[in-house]
Image (cartoon, rainbow, N blue to C red):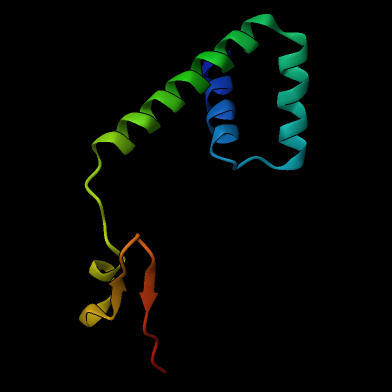
Length: 87
């Protein structure tokens, strides 16, 4: 794996919130000291943001009642979810 691929993986994991504290510190040091790494991170972050926005714009709504057995969830006016739980 080359350096850019390693950085991509590290940066992607950072954007997903999957880094340990030590890895977060490593990313911060890398971004402070390497202009190419900063540019790479900015490009990945922009791409990640644009992809997320596109997915949200085109995603079909999923209602919680569709995820529960026997339709035990309801959606009230205004989007408030109500769940009936049984033991």
